[in-house]
Length: 326
Ligand SMILES: [Zn+2]
Image (cartoon, rainbow, N blue to C red; front, side, top):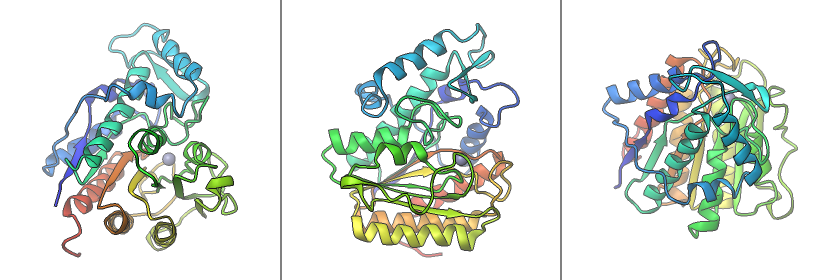
């Protein structure tokens, strides 16, 4: 029942970060090429008209405007990815195309969420950049400018009548921006498995949310070198516990592939088997609680082959629908 959809727009490749920055367009291009080669053809529906408003439910309007102005003022370059400047941090290289790419990444993510909610797709993977999970309400961080997964989660609970959304993050870095956004929000639960201590410094097991969100933030911090058994195993156990308790109506995934054994930044040892286990568990949780509704967004992943392999594993598991076992 239903189908798996892949979303991508080549516009997101125009966000320029300079030749030597790990978060370059090649990583997403490699992902999409690999998926296309396996028959997963990307779609590029228009961004919903509410995209800017949805972004401003997570990010302060002056911050969004400041990002737009910084892109506009980036040094002249053609194509628009050629000349870049830095925005908020030395990690965040930005070019003339950065604002448009970041907004489009959010717009495609919202379009994927709409398609899944409408039953046009059962699950979706959004292959976009820049990534989002470190972005905070008023600042860019860690290659991220706009927190797409947070925007989609908030849009679901505030605009689409969804009561409970689970955001599960298996990127090797802690999704600090997402955690912060929903820290006291009882409608969005957040689970993150990551290397710790590591960038961005947050994500200890004692960080569990507050107020109406008390107990709805769940961190699984792991040491460098963690492998399929510890990384995927830790994620799956925490996911099942949290999902049984929270009963999400939609599952969102911050799918970063920088815990892959080949990744130059992550220092972990996850293989395709580990990604297979994590995505299979996510599909089961979505099937059990959310009528299968799952939207995964690309976050990090800096080895092109590793990222493409992880994304292909994710697509195959989601497209498989769970009727068969491996
Ligand atoms: Zn990462």
